[in-house]
Image (cartoon, rainbow, N blue to C red; front, side, top):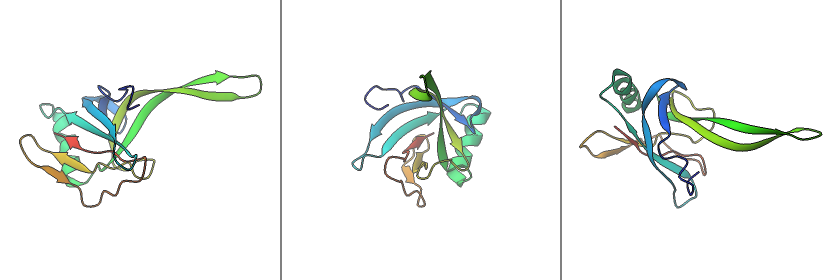
Length: 130
């Protein structure tokens, strides 16, 4: 995902529904090998403002990937193939451990690190930019 740039431009949603609130602008692996991304939410929309407030207030503190999987049929079983990233959602509680929003930044303000975000190796998501 990182080396191929598959994260850049992926739409941001809330709870896997509704219109896009923004996009992923960067994806990278940190020093521990955990996947990180920087997202930008459009606060000129009502939905973007509400989602940003939920992040600030800790109501929505996790992220969840929306993707499709290419399933291939073999003679004796189904085999999962390539995954295609469809969206990343801001959610109240993610399905996997360690997929937290660890920081956010209001326009023109400092980066604010969330004190409760303890990223798990390979499952973390970084900065949420508003």
